[in-house]
Image (cartoon, rainbow, N blue to C red; front, top):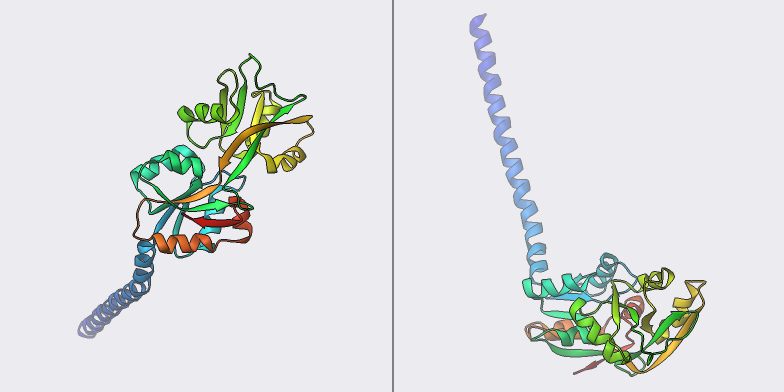
Length: 261
């Protein structure tokens, strides 16, 4: 009886050993199979040219990023919601290209502009001041507090606004990250007025019951989005991809066509 029990245990051990070896081979085979499928995809993603985008809109950055990556799958697009993060990452990990408003691109060094966005043939859009109750007296001796979407960062926005509206006294600036935040500056009386694109006035007014007044400003224009390059390596590929953007994505960018430079 002990002899038979020993044989049974011996067979069981051999069987367990075979099962372990089979399981090991199965795991290794599965890993190899997955690697064969995953590796090309990962390599392909890494080989894509990169583009950083800073276009402050009411569309959330992650949602806009998904839209752009879906529209131009040949380019790896990263959208930033704050100009500080945008500027920091350009220095930290330079992309092949950047897409932003023209003043933002002109503010960066070592970037050549390949495409300029146009709206009805113009590379710029006019801005106006929106205030509550009465229009703004630009030449008044009092110092104005102006709200605006941040394009250049804290240090440079004051000069940027001063050049746009040329007030008698350099205005104080209240910066926001999204256009939708401008209205709250007026509602809570944080700013005397806010600067917005002229074509957005109707939509801006529709969001509030405040008695909003428009003050036109002669010569107050901001350059529309442009495509700048830090490298010529993938220039043609990225340029071609951006020129094909249309529909909702194009509307968000405020561009109806592109001009090569």
